[in-house]
Each structure stands twice: as structure tokens, then as C-alpha cells.
Image (cartoon, rainbow, N blue to C red; front, side):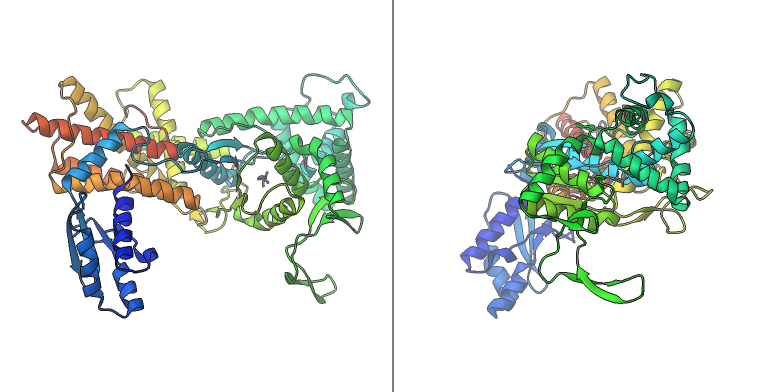
Length: 597
Ligand code: ARG
């Protein structure tokens, strides 16, 4: 069984075919006038234009093909030639039953499952995560769950930034503080870390700032980076300590967000593959010298852009820029490890698709890497996708900063949101009879729901303004509102169990029941759209619509009150179906529902 919209599309397509009309015009959409119809098809208008026919007449002919189909209760022609369709109560009841019964709660599996790697999170070792990593983590986690739900084999990979210039900077800074003295020669080296997380968080910004002014320091850090990558044993040992210290902190932050990975790999894991990759690039004649560095040209014939040289002259150069593979110091760069990681993923996961959930501002970087990968034969065109996203902004419309003007650490953001969630719970009189432990657990869930839903309810490409007051409200289109609705249904189901009310066959009678069943049916389309566009916002929208339709139904159709056992059983079953689908939808957004509040 598939969703009603797909089934009706099929029927309308057959009608178009029977009339010799182009089938791609036979689209069916949910009706924008629920008082008149459940679904509509507007294709007769365009078809009539093409065929130079009267649209109403044509719509009438199409309608005769639809009449008498088992799922259709009525077909009407409205306005200039819209085909309005109402489905039967029985077919709606069957669909709701299906939602209630199956693990897919109304959605479908993909026809051809694929092997998919999702690269998200992308934190950097030795740098605390900030809000920029928040969006990637939230969107990536949701896509991972959605792709898996629809039947793909999925690996989420954090792809830590642990092999670049920042490592050289840190080692140089540690040397200057005299903390690297035990890490000279060939070892053995101390097994206890010479640095704590606090050290790293203090050292990194200082070293990065210093490198901007102090060219001698910068050059030393570059050399250190190259030596680390070349295998200097003491540097590698220091690297490992910094890596592990950061990793522990990162895992804690990700944990607090309910974000998990199947692979905790980093740029450094691609390092062993670089020599072989360089050989391949050489053999294929792709690696060319460029002022001491080695690059891969990725622009195609005729792809150029204008570039202003330091002396002011404007020249035409190929575009995109070439991919820098080996720097003049002999270091691997950001693009080098990204390209080698594709080799790794080809070997290990044998992917059909890799999705990179990374800030839109890195679009050019990925264009270079993807083109180089295809040229080198590591991936086929279309197998690598950059899913860019906009920024989370402050009230001034610029990327979010702390009051002091710095980047906000993710851990602080999470704590700030939890604090607000506690206040919101108190304000709403929720959780008062719970133990403090349970209250904390719920506050944490409300906080995560607030952050994730606020993010995912926007199309990922859109930037949005961070508004904690609005995000944490129990009213409006928010995560906490949805949790509240889910919890309300859970408590209703508990009450029903206490009163020995049991679910029965679903019957669709009241308008509010119809409306609710139609929303349940629409989950399949929402999941498909979110999957196809790699945009969880379609799921967020659906969850909200479902909660609203339930509210309306609950107000109009008492569940435990009716004296008729069949009515009670049916309504209870509907409520159960809603809860199941709502919980699945929220879970696909990465949001966990508490049992009570
Ligand atoms: N570490 C990078 C950053 O903080 C993001 C990594 C994204 N993934 C990738 N394969 N390049 O900007």
C-alpha cells in the first residue's frame, strides 16, 4: 500500500494517458480547499492549453475515468477546470490503520537502497565546537536517521579536523611554553598528556592570533605541520595526546546534543593514503607543479573568472581554482585530506553516495575536491554532494557571537538553552511532581528539541536568527510544543489503559478525523521530499501539522467519553497512530520524546 496521493496520481496519470494527454501534467496535490476536496489535480488546464481544447470539458472527460475507482468518493470540476477529488472514509480508515500497524508509520522504503556516507559535525581537534558546528551536527544527524529509515546503509562520519596547520601551531606553542621537552628524539614518550583541554582552549586562539602578526612563528608552525605529517615521532606523540583530550570533550558535547557517529574518523586517518593517491594523480597526469606547490587543475575548457592581481591589473584565470594537493612546504592541505578521505571511503564503505553537510561558505572547496575526485576516478559524477547551509545569526543578522563578541562555545550554548528550558517548564507548571533527576532529564530533552526543531524547521540553505525565547516556548511552531503534544497523547493512552479502554478498528466519521487521517497519509510525501531534497524541514513541517491536526481532533472528538465502545476504540487507535508517527518524525529530526512532563 502506498499513500493516497501517489495512488491518485497513478489514477490521474492513467486518465491522462487514456485521453492521449501528456502524463507529466497529471500531478495530484493536497487540496487547498479542504472544505471542497481532499486532493486536486490542476493538470487539465495546461493540457487543454496545449491541445487547444476547452479546459472544463477536458477536465470533465478526465473525471469520467476516475469515477468508480475504489478509493474515490467523488470527483468534481471546479473553476476553470480543476479536478477536485474526495477519497472515501473507508480508504482513509485503512490508511490510518496502516500507519498504526507498521514500523514505517506510513512512509515507504526507497526502491534501490544505497551505501551512503554522511560527513557532518566536522569539529576541529583542539578547538572547542562553536555554533557553526551546531547546524552541521543537527542537519547531518537528521539526514543520517532519515536515510537509514528509508532503507539505505548509512555511515555517519565526524571527519575531525586534526591534520592541518592548527596542529603545527599548537605544537609550536607547546614548545614555546617548554611543554614539549619530553617529546624529542624517538621516544618512548610520556603516556600522560602534557596538555589539558583548558590548555588547548587557551593556547589555540593565542597561537592563531600570533601567527597572523609574527611571520617567524608562522613559518615555524608551518614547518612543524610538515614535520608532523612527515612522521616526526615526538610530534606524533604530542598530536595523539591533543587528539585524545579533544576527542573526549567533543564526544561529551555531541552526546549532550544526541548526535552520534558510526565513524569517529579524522583528516589524519587519510594520511596513510596520501602517498598512493599522489602516485595515482601523477600517473594520470593530473598533478602539476605550481610555484613550488603541486596542484590539480579542475576547471573545464572555457570556465574562467576575472581576478585582480596585487598590482591592480585584472586577468582572466580558470575557475574553479586548482586544488592544492601539496603545499610548497610539503604539507597536506584541507583539500588533500578530503580527497584522500574519498579514497578511504571508496575502499572501506564502497559508497554510492557521500553527503557533506558543511557551511555553504565552503562550496568552492567542495567543488574543487569533487572535480578532482572524479578526474582521478575515485567517484562518479553525482556521487559526491555538498549540502551547504546558512548561518545561525544573532539579533543583528550577523553570524551569532557572544555579548563579548567572541564565538559562542557549543557547550555554553547548550547549557544556556537548558537553563531557559528549566525556566519554561516552571513557568508552565510542568514537571513539578517529578524527582530532580527526572526534571533535569526532561529539561535536557526540551532544550535539545528547542535547538533542533528551530534549526530544522528552516530550509537548510536559509540563515536564521537565534531567538532562545521563541525556540523554547511551549506555544507556536517549536520543539517544546511538539514534545508537549506527544506527552499529552502518552498520558491519554495511560489513562485509557487505566480505564480499560482498548483500541479497535479505525473508522473515519467526523471532519476532524478525516483531516487527521489525511495528515497521517501525508507523512510519506514529507519523508520523500525531505529525502530527495536532503531537507529535514519537510519532516519538521509535517510533525507540526500532525500535532495541530491532533489538537483539533482532540477538541472536537472526545476520546474516552463516548459511550459507544467502537467509537472509543477507533479514536483511541487514531490517537495511538498519531503518537507513533509523531514520535518517528521527531526521532528523524533527532528529537527524543520524554514519557511525561
Ligand atoms: N573541520 C571543518 C571546519 O570546521 C569542517 C569539515 C567538514 N568536512 C569535510 N570533509 N571537509 O570547517
